[in-house]
Image 1 (cartoon, rainbow, N blue to C red):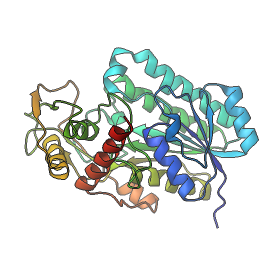
Image 2 (tube, helix red, strand yellow):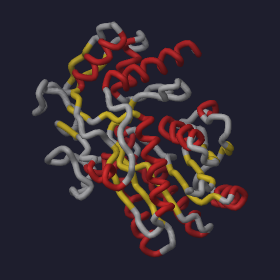
Image 3 (tube, rainbow, N blue to C red):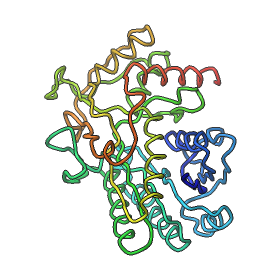
Amino acid sequence: MLEKPTVLVTGGAGYIGSHAVLALLDAGWPVVVVDNLVTGFRWAVPEGATFVEGDIADTDLVGALVAEHDIRAIMHFAGSVVVPESVENPLKYYDNNTAKSRILIDTAVSRGVPHFIFSSTAATYGSPETSPVTETMPTEPINPYGRSKLMTEWMLRDTAAAHPINYCALRYFNVAGADPQGRAGQSTAGATHLIKVAVEAALGKRAGVSVFGTDYDTPDGTGVRDYIHVSDLAAAHIDALEKLIAAPTESHVLNCGYGTGYSVLDVLDSVDRVAGTSIKRIMEPRRAGDPDALMADNSAIMETLPWRPRHADLDGIVADALAWEKELAERG
């Protein structure tokens, strides 16, 4: 029976982090959450997890938590995630995503935490010439967000080569949906994720949805992306953690996606079906740097971990996102 030591979850009050906390608690792992609540929500941290408001760069705080709770693994979600903002304010991203991650990794090493799971991104690939994308393809990010995450991957790789720590960097594709039990979801105001924006429009919170580019080399001319349900993504973190503990000399970099692509119009059609509405589509010019299609080759994660998708249905993803959006509307 695998021992379940305490896990420190950074950014556990945010969208993906809160789902990981739920998955950990559901599976019987003790959890400590540290979050500065700049973008996260205190109410998003479920009962059962120990919550501490603070910054991951506060080495005294994090070090004390490691000692007090005998933390043996870190799941690192804390960071900034808005690509256009990273272009406008790159130093914020190199501070929040890269410099603070370096401090956190240093704390993990100095305090003897042996396992580290990192929330990375498909943005590390940039605009790949072919899709689906494998982990061995060149990493050529085209914005500071992607570069800030790739730098952290490099730091983890070099640190694992020099110290007794192993890691798994999970490269997310397009994360969407909400906890099927209605316990958590995407709650950030002004979020830019397509499915979040579309379900807001379906409920009248937005006048319509902008479609950026209709002349891509795709079946309907709009960009194609790989959407992964946030609960499947959270499950991947649990499987990755168990793998790190079982094989402490091995580290991994793994894509998290389904290998299935849906266009912008596919997504909007799904929201129309699920919500019983007709969302206004506002056709706009392309955004710089958006590739025609970006999908994961997920063969590596399927071979490395026991993880298998359980929510890989677009209408199902949309239904969970819509249910959560209604929950937020009722809360006011």
